[in-house]
Image (cartoon, rainbow, N blue to C red; front, top):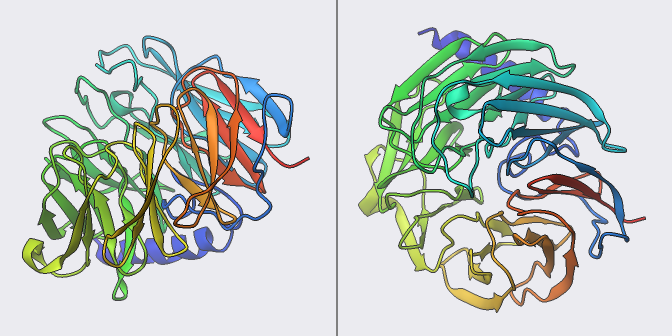
Length: 402
């Protein structure tokens, strides 16, 4: 393996990605994968007739979240039986279709109704857009919709299907292909499609990987069954791990440049980890643990607090330094989407299409409860250009202040 070549790719990718990121929302949970936006003047009130700039019907349904880059929105969908998977590019100004790319899959892939076949959110670096369809493969296009490369990483069978989203960091795409017995974590050069490395039997679940910087080096963090693992992004070698995760990991890790926070799965705990070290650091690097973390929705760290909302609508604010619970609040409805934050506000949508807007303070006072018509809102909102992009299973809304 040519590590010098990979380092050069990382360096070039860092300049190209970071210099143009701006107000884009290029991947699952935004620029850093942490659900936080630098946007201001975000809307706080809307309904089907107020502050809805446009909405479009989606013929191919799924629960993937929208991503944005400059004037474009990218979103995926599938046919009811999963035989067709699509990547859709829309115009950000009016929701009109720019292009659509379809993949035909004639294999068998189990899933369950609440998940579907296209739950993974696509990712873009501004030159490429990558969609991962589980057993149907990964497809990378340029921004005009021309196929650059594709990979069939194998069949991944689980009764609940797949949902982990790919990420792009410094010119390399990282994909967790699973869950399944023969799962794998893969690094692919985005420009060429060359597989740089892959690790088998990672034994993860539905949690999306997170890239963090620690002591002048980078670590790729993945929550897996029984463990939180950190990998060297250049080689895929395991750096460290901690025990304490449960068998089902869904929520994404959180990171505040000092501590890493992981939601363990059932039973639901939040573990604060000091990254770094080598091999098993369970006894030395767990800083604190707190109960009551959500099973599926990911939280956010914002204004130095940890905010989380579980599937039953229990919102909680924690002290990030010691895990102390500062407040709780009950929201109405059922939730599977994850929190996002920006403009000193928190946003989360229940499955009925009501988006709660909360103050990003320990009190979490409710600013607004905003309903939208549609079916099963599980996708996480995207924040870009002072707007929210909220997806139901069959419809995408653009929300902004008029």
